Image (cartoon, rainbow, N blue to C red; front, top):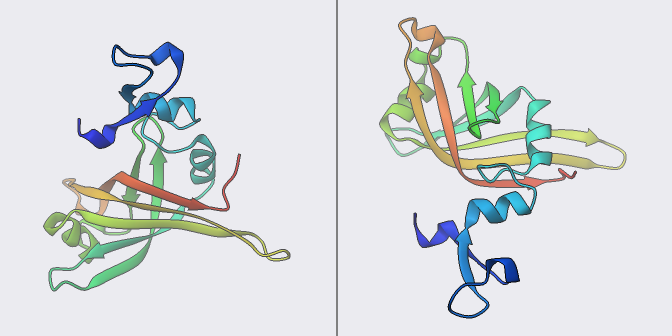
Length: 154
C-alpha cells in the first residue's frame, strides 16, 4: 500500500498510540462515506447500472488519442468496467490497450433539457485486454484509478 491508500482519522474509536491521529485504510474511510469497496459512490453505481453506452479514449502507438463509443457493463463486485463491441479483438482500441493500458472512459447523458441538467462520470485508469478464441468476443477490462462525476446525486 502506498501513502495514498491511507487517510488521517480523528475519531476516538480510531485513536492511536501517538495521540488523536491514526492512519486508517482508505477503503474503510470510503465505506464510511458511502462509497463501494473500490471507491465508487453507490449513487454512481446506480447511475452506471442504468447506462449502456460510453466513450473510450485510448492512446495510439503514434501518440495520438482515439475516442470511440462502446458498449459497457459495470461490474459492481470488482468495481471494473467490461468493454465489449463488435469484433473487439481486431479493433484498433483493443490493440491500443495491448500496447499501452492507459485509458479514459466517459458515460454521460442529459437528465433534462429544461432546466439543463447534464450528468456524467469520467473514469481514468488502466485497462487490460481479455482475449477470447473468437476475437469478436474479446473484451477490455478497465480498473479505475480516478473517478470524477457531475450531476449524479443520491
